[in-house]
Image (cartoon, rainbow, N blue to C red; front, side, top):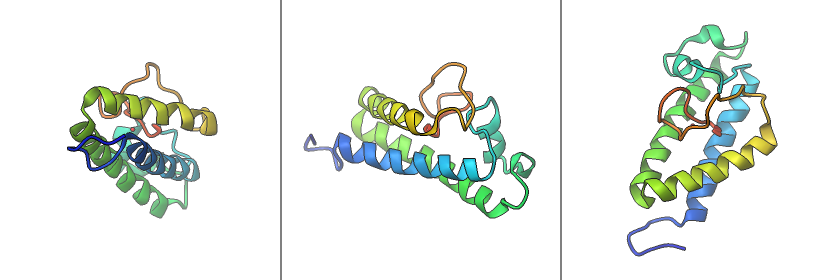
Length: 127
């Protein structure tokens, strides 16, 4: 349900977050990047191609761009819904994507909200 100040409902935000994070997951798998392993997201954002599988440079570039989009969506989500509701949306997306993706992207030691420190989610989805 949408409040008067909200441009998007929780469900619309959830779909947006999931769409972005699923694309990040697909690109990471294609590029052989274990995105959820410690320090990997930072290396992608730093454009460190050494962590990318050979022949996947264009996919890596898209992955990097999608990670930046992920963080922008997270910021707007928190701004519109507030941090508590935003965290709930992110957690629902993360749980749904975990079922679909499993550990193909690595594992986080401690689940964190995206952008809150070591690793983020891309689904996380993962960020």
